Amino acid sequence: MPDSVGLCGTCADDDPIDATLTLGDYAAPFDRLILRLKFGARLPAAGWIAVQLASQLRATPLPDLLLPIPLSSHRLAERGFNQAWEITRPLARQLGIASSATQLVRDRDTPSQRALDLASRHANLRDAFGLSDAGAVSGTHVGLIDDVMTTGATLREAARLLKAHGAARVTAIAALRTP
Image (cartoon, rainbow, N blue to C red; front, side):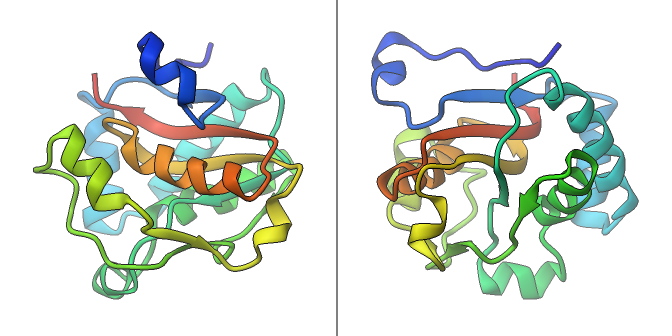
């Protein structure tokens, strides 16, 4: 059964995310899988994650389009790949739905979120994302893919943009979430 992240009443009232699906908590032993993927370039781990996510997603309304959370051009050049896209590609193939690595774009490089508190995370991400074709998401159910959901600030900022451009529904899909 998919895990969902609960929200307080205040957050739920204006949350642009309609549903959240994760495989579980960012804890041993699966946290090592994410670290190996993200920082060790162990790309086959993304395929395994995609299989697990596909199994969970089949029990829910499927998105029309899967979009990975984009990295900044600087971080992408440093790492050589976007771990969210590496999960998105095989997930889209398994589910038979469209995906795009270029529809959601990172308009500006932002500092790492790791050491920031919640308010700083939101401020850091404000207007960080854009769309290459704003009309392409209108009326669609979009699945936003990321490797780890910590506070949800990144996914919410991307979802806010998608909803502002007419997305009918946004589902946040993260391999793991911090407890």
